[in-house]
Image (cartoon, rainbow, N blue to C red; front, side):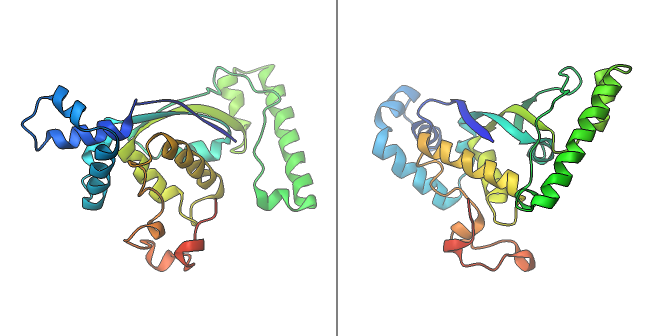
Length: 225
């Protein structure tokens, strides 16, 4: 898996603070920008987060390049509908020797790993054979969820909070959990105040929201990256 932060709103902490202050200030926007930068902006953002005043977070966005993930992951990712996605097409891009993702539970067992690789080889052969007769859009029906894909995804910060809350959780599926932690590390570097409270519920004052489905582990070791 490779995750890259392609683009982001410049000075996201400052912009969120300025957008929030605008709601309660008679100053013009230029004056607000001059007065609300750096540490003052950080303090205001932290206050917003403590009050759960989340709408100003929507003014900043982050665009990620995501490669080497499975179609199983991408089908989960697009459930986060308040984001924009561009994914490599299996209709137009032929994948005779497609790469694939192997779950750790299979990779750690040599016998199962061999069975898994053989299954992938058989699907490659079937796909290549079908391509000699039918369009790629029909041949792709034999491609597995394990087939590697790549995409570009854009989220605003509020949507990212929801994504991190759900997908950084220890109960999230392993691959999308790894993606979520990688994305969180990237945005924390660019907007440390905005994402200071991001992560699963067990990292917050609210505590775990999974109820009977909770993993029951103490917060300090509940989530593994």
